[in-house]
Every structure is written in C-alpha cells, then in structure tokens.
Length: 259
Image 1 (cartoon, rainbow, N blue to C red):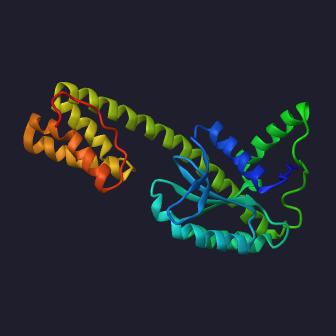
Image 2 (image 1 turned 90 degrees about the horizontal axis):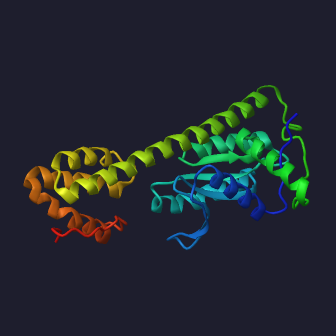
Image 3 (image 1 turned 60 degrees about the horizontal axis):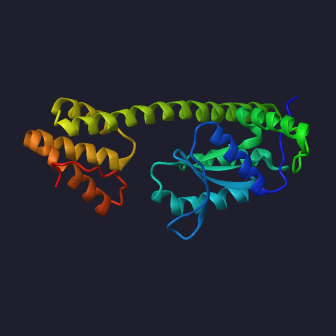
C-alpha cells in the first residue's frame, strides 16, 4: 500500500510544494507580503497557497478566514490551503474542506493526492541514496479512516484534485503560450501599422483572464476601429493610463510615432 509523507517542519512542507511547482513550470515566490499586512506562503502565476502542517477543522476555518480578507488583491490566482491529513478526525476535516471549497478556496490534502505522493516517493529514493532526509517517517495515510463510504469519498476527492491540478497546469501553459504569441504579433503589427493583424491579435488578448490585458485590448480595438491607422498612436497612452489608474504592469515599448 502506498505510504504517505511527513515533514520535520512546515518549512519543509512548503519547500516540497515549491519544488513540485517549479518542476511543473511555475514561477515560485515564497513569503510574499500582501496588502493586508500578512504574507502568502507560496505565490505562482496560477496559485496563492497557504500552508498548514495538519489540515484540522480549526486550521482550515482559520486559514479560510485569513484568505478571504486577502484574495481580492490577487484576482489572477486560485487560492489554496495545503497541508497533511490530520492524525484524527479525518472525516470531519474532509467535510470542512468541502464547505471551504464552496467559498472558492481549494484544499489540497497533500498526502492524499497522487502526483504529490509519486513525487515525494521519487525524492525520498534520491535522498536515501545520498543523505538522510530531514524526517522521512512513513505511515499509512488511510490508517483508521477505512470507514465504508468514508474511504470512497476520500479517494474520490483526492483523484478529483489531482486531475484538476494537472489539467489546469496544461491548460494554463497552453493559454500563456497563445497569449504571448498574440502580444508579439500585435507589437509586430504596430511597428508597420498593420491594422488587420493588430485587430486579430487584439481579439485573442481581449479573452485574457488578466483584466489589465483584456481592458487594454478592448480600448485599443476601439481606437483602431474609430481612428483607423491613426489609432496606433494610442497604444502607449492606453497602456500608461491603465498602469497609472488601474495598477497594471503593461509593457511600454518605444515607437517612433507614439505620443
């Protein structure tokens, strides 16, 4: 039977998650200050993750309350509470996790999700061949939890989360590549005042999940439709306005014709 994992400290758990995310294409930042005066344990282009050693009922509710005060400042990230299954009252924790999920916050029981378990096993093998891990005490993750429907619910939940993680990552990578290509096509079109190509690129950018990108695309589309090629002169003024008024970080490029 597959064994779960334990870590010597919460910092070790965070380090493990950071390595997994980095290996799957994420740009990872730790202990990122938030506008409310706290810190986000792990921040990537996709996720804002708060970690707890054990996902007890108390830890889940307390962390969910903290996240709800901050999540509005990070609209592009999906919020997650991550940690290990508690040693007792597992069924109650899973029930609380379902309630927390209804508020828009995901819950990762790290020792119950197949991609994490497989990754941990590979790391453990590598560590044993070199140096001893910080604390690799192996145990049965479902010990004492094999209660009829409870077992099925746990497995169903863990597989659902695993597929969500992997599918979303693949979708995000594809989306980011397409958006990057649309930006490059747009900048090339702007250089030569190619209206048709520019409008085609802007149609793609208008569908972006990033509100700044979508707002820029809509405004620039309007400028080109109303002013024709003269609308190209508005590209930097539009970006500058969004950066100043909406707190965006749109890339400013120099054009000979731009104001």
